[in-house]
Image (cartoon, rainbow over all chains, first blue to last red; front, top):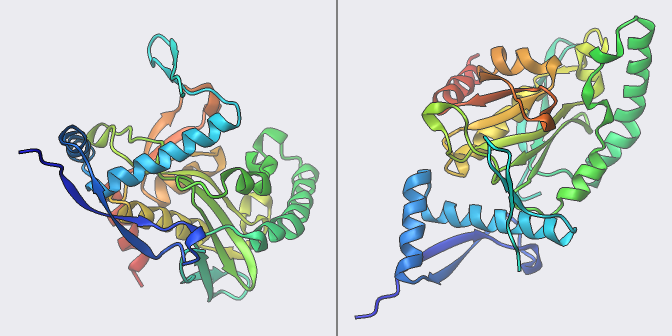
Length: 90
Length: 214
């Protein structure tokens, strides 16, 4: 039987909803098995709740998008060789 | 601001008495006005005093070039980069910007785990002994802001883990007063030889317990 895992997420609301930032809103997120597995792996590895992992993902996504919009490039640098690899953002 | 201001206490060094203050989880236009109209003129006067006292330029605070308006504008609306401020007597006494997403722990026991990184933190010029204010007006601003970073770390599920690069004049504060682990000079040229300090869960508990002592 096909099963789509889901769980309750609580996010800080956006100001466009005209409620204080500290108020939280609840949404249901449907994930595939593979997505849920990755989320669980990250949650275990990082010792964070699934909600915390998704919050971090959202913050990083916004950060990366904002810098790319400003015309910057996104690189990973090898700590030892100092070789840089650009992450292509489409 | 995302919630009500939190009541905190500073030590008024002129009156030698505690004074009620507020911790805001925001940097608003009000704080930026204080920085422009009160901090900057006071900082210029202080630098003049350092010059008169013959203190070499390399010993002047590196934060003298910081532009808080530019920083606040650059980070406005970014979920990863929240701002904090300390208000007392209607004036901004301290400012801080955190990075809650992009940095990872370096201490071996917690390597790779998420932490709250203190990106920028600054005390008002009149609170700084190194700017030859004798006595500085308020003490405790730095501790309140580090405490706020720890609380943010706990709220995010990062278990009190906090990291930062210290300006040289603040090494003792983070190492001795805050009890953070000194990881030495960061070889990354971006940090110009600044020392990196990191706080574990256990160290954050000791720091918080110290603040509760009468």
